[in-house]
Length: 401
Image 1: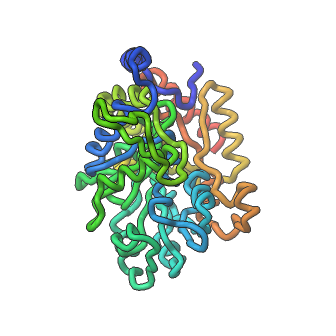
Image 2: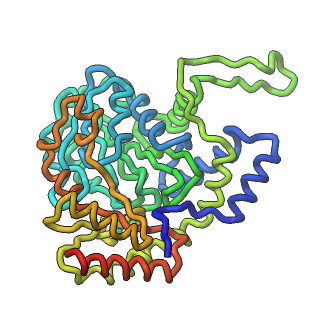
């Protein structure tokens, strides 16, 4: 049996929706993109969300809305994909990388608090694997440091403390025990709709933001639309008014808009969210039950009160090293099961080494990475395939542990 790591769950309904859009008069950003934005906001329990062409674009546009730039600092965890930190560089700010909580993949709250200075303009928590961070704790940290916060623009002034700009690329559809969802807990949350995610538009993402006292949310969403499409304010004229073609470039923006073709995939996927999440939950439960008694194997608690979107099933081989992990993955692949690693901590990459970061300063992140393996977890897996993954994993553990 050959089991790929994470193929997209695309059915005939998504294909039909794309065909319908392509036959329409509007295939780029239009009514379907706006509909998906509105429905994403509803799912996240916030008034507004804006769909764009990637989570990275969303993350960067949040930074730009906040006026973050040269001379500013943004705190980000070492254990994440580069997109969480690269946008900090893109806007001209300085990434301040901190370690993770011992035994977890989440940002170290203590390290984040210690890293705050008067130059700190945002904290970027990462919901790795789909398990949400402790946003109540992060908000408390932000509030406790408001005395040294120096706002740079009206949006920062309105927030009145260090903004929490969440990387929720993995946590779309995650929900805490109290009913709070990813997207309504941080000030801004960027989501990924990439092909391997729980919910996909092939490529794409959305930026959700909660209400900010003194800020017009509708105007903020319009500002995002301008940022994402060249700063072009298309002045649609009433019928008969001339010149009907004229537009203005309000400022030099970017090209990050989502198309209606991609949004049409997302609208169908939205109608299937509970079906997709239910299937992922059932697979996670089967994995948990099967692996709970294997000595030396540690798994993520997806069913914690923090809530999870069940995006990744990550296991660790306690007290083992990278060489063991890599041999284990090779053995699984020989038996037909593709696995992955999420992620190499930022300081292990050349780009971040060149910025002066050293993995020796992030022992917790390295400890979590060195023996981590991610197993297949997606809604297309059949019962037979899940059973084969479990059987293969347990056999390989028996052979190697």
